[in-house]
Image 1 (cartoon, one colour):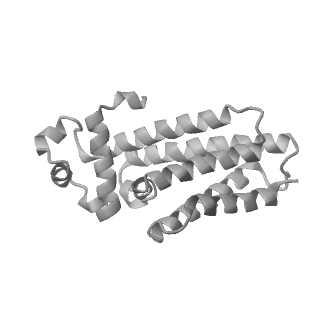
Image 2 (cartoon, rainbow, N blue to C red):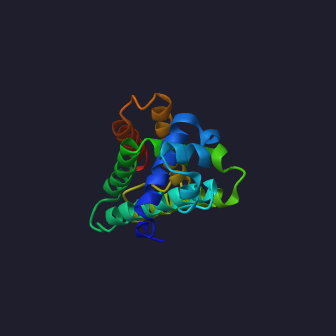
Image 3 (tube, rainbow, N blue to C red):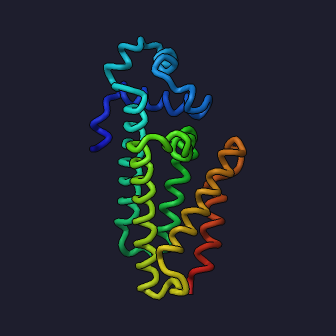
Length: 197
């Protein structure tokens, strides 16, 4: 799937759904409320998505495709130092969250997904995409002698991802008042210093 598979109206619906979740919570995301937000009839909305679940799946698919493209462009810079690539990946991801803060409410809301296997699988795919790329850079850095091998690449990846998740949640809970990109940059710099040889 590519993001060209979505119509402009579908994208508009997904953006409205994200904003509603961010503002009111998942329990207030209904077809009726969403149709009202968009000044559409419920029947018109159903022509674009079969259900609320289909909207959520579409939203996550759209974000994964976009995220994959951003990361692939960064990783393609083969001559760049692994630490710089990691910084660029997280800077890109955190900048996207700053530009689209409502997406954080969707991605980081386990309550939305815990009883829906399809949605859980999408979020898992998103995490796996990020994990795979970070892990590959850690392995590369260890093989090149940039990072120590006192810990394997898997635990280092988990530490980095978990720490960045904490920075994003702190930013979300502050009402987006902290400087997410800068806070993430400082944290990642500290973590990289800990693993560099």
